[in-house]
Length: 360
Image (cartoon, rainbow, N blue to C red; front, side, top):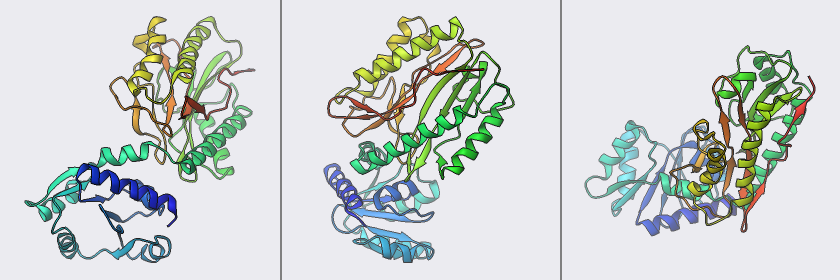
């Protein structure tokens, strides 16, 4: 276990101490991965305020856990009653026990019964999300590589996609090119031909890309466990005046965010920057999703660049900047970049050109 993960656990322990939380039970695979670096389909990470965490797992991962997780107490799961008895013995003096808010009822109730009535149960989901929200330099490097791979993949696809192809054909080419590059996708790609671009989360179907029409592509890949995310709205042929009008407004909103975002702003302040541009242009009602979200081990992490999120941006956060306008029966445009918050502004990780016009 290298210093990166030890540092993450120390940050968690410091946050727990500040909140008066004696121990935290982390069940979800992504949080176990974040704090250990070990991907497993089964396990539990038990962290107290001080001392070595305990990593519980089954026989499939015991050997690799002993080999990889140096500095942790590795234990094999016992039958349910014995396991709960172990927790009770460990927690005789605990007053506050943390759990993840995504636990199933079957996971939560036995924990609650084990520690009641002497200890109260509190969710640590927000606390862990806050820690994960600020990426370390090595995480940012991985996301940077992921964004570069995403750029390169789209560049290849733009050489392949052409009018006459259906969305499903383009999806097939996407997955073949992705596999050839040894990549996996961070979410199901969104490929929208023509009027389908007004559906911001359209699922590819048999719609054929026609000459002199738009193609919206929202895509991301995973590199070293970390996700990327980017949207480009291409036009094949000569852009119509209507498309040019809508595209210019969306691009202005995207650019306003890139030029203004910085530490100290609240997420809702950044959302407002883009929303004000689109509203002033008369299309506010057609921009009905949040400006963006954080990206890391998962494609959607906290915080969100939304109207209601008051989280203050800090250096090391990685967020998307993806304003859009979707006029039903008319034109849909989204432009999305991946940004790292720096000490003074942002670093843009998406390097594919934003204005792309291709021949029919």
